[in-house]
Image (tube, rainbow, N blue to C red; front, top):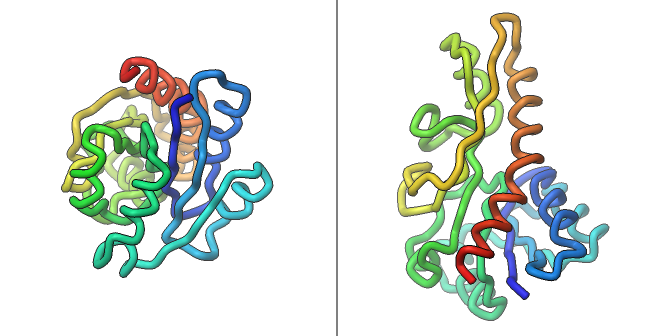
Amino acid sequence: MKRIVIFASGSGTNAENLIKFFHNSDNASVIQILTNNPHAKVLDRAKNLKVSALSFNRMAFTKTDDVLNILKASQPDLIVLAGFLWKFPESILEAFPNKVINVHPALLPKYGGKGMYGMHVHEAVVTNNEVETGITIHYVNEHYDEGAIIFQAKCHIKMSDTAEDVAAKIHELEMEHFPKVVEELLIENN
């Protein structure tokens, strides 16, 4: 049975979707949620879905090996960033090579980089009159949103769409594709 650890910073809708997707799977399960936000709604979702969850601070993540040691003890086959906003430390990336992935709410390389997350991305897409956007699932490296692309899905944007409309379209793409791509990665790396 493959083991998935999810990092999230906010509400945790993608985390919940992944937990539910793998709930009755014979192949994999979400074994743990880790968050940098002690007030994140993802903690409530994890509790309701009976998945272990922990929050940590920046010191534990970047200055000590506390989070790295938690991961080593959990032995994940895949670490999934689902709305996690901090840059990942090289120590974790080195300990888990090609095992850390992220979903980004745009078609990278457009609208990536530091500060480009959530509504910041959708507002930029609308402001620049883009006719399409989408999601990018990619490996995580030492730079924001620059890891190798695994998968992209697109949606069209109407001239009348607001950033909120774009956010809803992106959310649908994430719900549909993210769990399937995670599953395919786990099967490929068997």
